[in-house]
Amino acid sequence: MKYDITFHPSWWNKNEGICFTREFFDEPEYRMECDVRMRRALYERFGAYGIGEKQPKKRPLLGTDLLAAGYLYSELMGCRIVYQENNSPQVVCLDLDEDEISTMEVPELAGSAVWKRTQRQIDYLLEKYGRVETYVNLMGIQNIAMDLMGQNVLMAYYSAPDEVKELLAKITDLTIAAGREFRKLSRDNSGGVTSIVRKVQPECYLTSNCSVEMISNAIYEEFLLPEDQRLAHEFGNFGVHHCGGTMEHVADGYAKLRGLTFAEVGAGSDIKAVREKLPSVWLNARFSPVELNGASEEEIRARVQSLVESGSTENGLLSVSCVGIDANVTDQKVEYFLKACSEME
Image 1 (cartoon, one colour):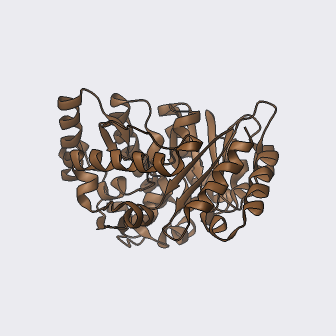
Image 2: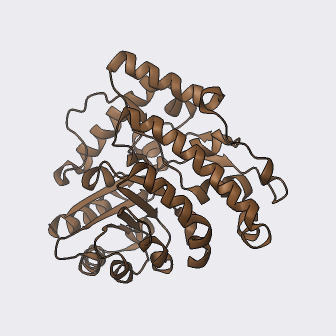
Image 3: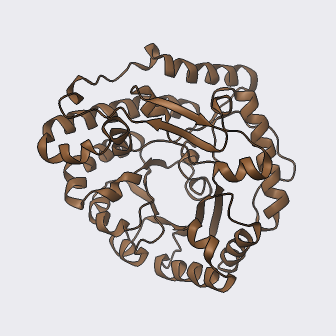
């Protein structure tokens, strides 16, 4: 069985002194230096479980597969980004109301100052290293809409459905345009959403449906399923990341996605119910980092075993990961998790 861990920036900052200021995301050489330190540190702590690298070399990275940090697409749409040493970039919501969303325009990437910063990094990496590994977080359509409208989008589904559909279509246009640029560089693009996908389906295009937890299946199918289907049609080998605790409530909608090959099942979700709806899709079961922090070794082992037994098929089609492990979690608890996963192999 495949398994993985991902740490929150607070863990990296406290334990390894990595700073996640704008320099980390905009300056390739600094990011690559940090990346080497990070992979070596993972090996020194957890190398016995196949985590990290003993002698890591520089990777020509755009973004990172060692964090889950979604912000770029919202910044392209006009949101301001706040950077912190011990946190992922934070998007400042525009708080648009339904009367304003019709005025939103999709920026042309070539004319966007935000994209020019990204393109500068791409050009630098191509010139110096001859290739680019793209692990920019592929933000989900509603995630971006909520960065633009906040909770107003949830009300606008009912009060201004046509306007919301137009906005979601515009966001999808932007997402496809950026995704096409990343696909020119590599087909391994989704590590910035969740790193485990690189181990099980590296060519999967994985959209981040974090906020879909907040809506009903009926709303998902009417408003977001058509946009996710556009992404699936464009990129193929499609996946959904649903980190919410009740993914089963929209599993019927996800089951209608043509081309769905991977789904990340949020901690707390009924993975058995999700498996029944998605019998041939690779599932990655999330283990809660909060639960990890408070559980004993025996409880961690039992939980991992339950996830495997509930989510596996005759062909396996299951992996387990713990994402967002923060500075409060001890290495011992992480080792308990990794050991439990390794025993499932």
